[in-house]
Length: 358
Image (cartoon, rainbow, N blue to C red; front, side):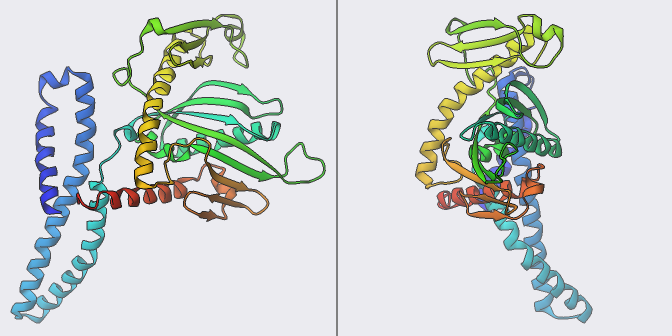
């Protein structure tokens, strides 16, 4: 492990020198990539320093104990020895997880799309509940949520809604939410008090930068139309909404959130780039998941991943068999525990796959 940490330290020193070079600072793509690498390596370098300090303290304590001498010093050395011995295995586990190669997409912002599935009006209401849950979660993380496009349900909620989330490690966190979410409850429209099952699909794409995906303007058809929904006269009476169609793939991205046609076009292009990027990424993720036998991030959008049962106050994540009886807090945005468990499961899978390297 120390050999691998020494290689990390050498690379950290190299990156530290590189990011202050003028030619690197003018190359935006390389500068951003090196900055991300610097942040990741810094955490490992700090853990390495802690590990080396602990090993030195352990050796020192062992020498004092073996030499005997002043009883007070020996007692202090024994206490130090026990503390260090207890900390080292935990630190080694932390380092092993940090040594697992990170997906470069994890640090990116994300585009999230919610679509009402089976269940009619109740599915739209549920999609609205999921949007509220994610909005509150993102707020608690200090992330920014920006609605791109939406289609309202007839009795509330959304038939579909698309929004951008920007912040630190957004995609690496929200990617675990992709899949089919199911709700079991008595709908607001139900007069007989029967429990119905409805569903909504969550899609999460890493937001692609311009240098991640090149979109040829000749391949894109641009249509302008009047926005629908709230927003006042200027939104609803001018051709400010933008729809982009990528002719080679048939992918469509649209935005009607802003009053400015230019801003809507900019947002729609960001979404289109992200969708094209995600198409390639989905193939890679499916291959990687198949190699690891992963159930956590298989990339299968049709996979039923979670059930919200209102009568039992229960939320079950089917990928890892996690059941929590804390539904009211979870639907109010407290989903961190679920994400932590999913991240742990994925890291454990990766650790098994990387055991030969560590």
